[in-house]
Image 1 (cartoon, rainbow, N blue to C red):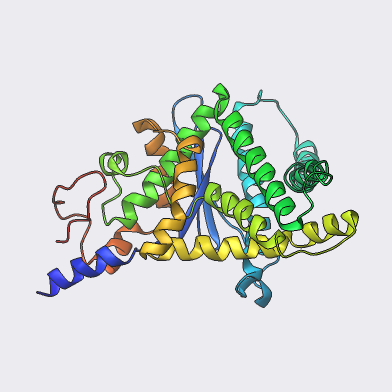
Image 2: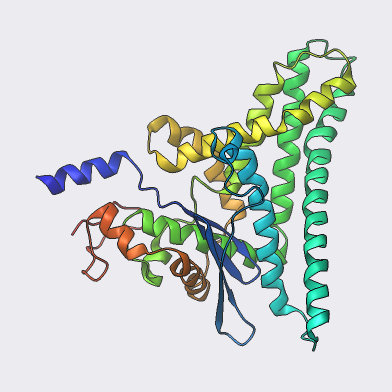
Length: 335
């Protein structure tokens, strides 16, 4: 009876693992609390894993844990850590050179400066493309659309269209396909664990490559929530209206983060419904990985996450017990 009740409960609520990550060049980064690991398939076919602590740009400040504010800090931390791990993975495919200690230290200092400039430039470029450009295009229709609410909706449609075109254009690039396969491997590993399955290549391959806590879904929520929020911005001056939109970006990011966070912890019907558009969009930003890619993702997970203890605590099962068969998207078997 206890087992049956446990099964029913699991159908109603998700099992949040707390791990997340991103794809890098020929590899996967996984983060669990303050620890992260990057695993990369080297040119010689071996897997190399780097594990470190990442306290974040802001450290353990109380503000970084406040609802709505934490989303802004988390987003910036994700950009910085993502750039660091992407740079590390790219180093394996650069031409090897002999450097002395002073040269290496100088290179590391230059890399940090370049990383900071790249993150700053990326933020400015994103604001220009997804905030300023749609706003500017909407101003061209002021003579035809007098209603401010309709003009804001038109601006939102333009913004969403630019975003979708951007995602589709990136997804069509041949060089990005392998990165998106590793992105799929990352999602499959997390889904495998949160379904209660031992982290094996076979089980991971059978899991879904779509996940509600994906950064793709977060960005889509940013676009959709901006449409709703900008409807209530009533400023006559076009310049001030643009300034207000830029100032509201942290607010939008904070709300979007809370929605994604809730989605990752709940299987509520309404939450699942609002998560659907993000899952559909992930069909562009993820691809089915091969087994070699899954091996890399598993290595990254195991470096920072005790998945055996997680399965026993969350699902009441030991990883060394035989698993009952189920479908690719079926409920986890309870031993």
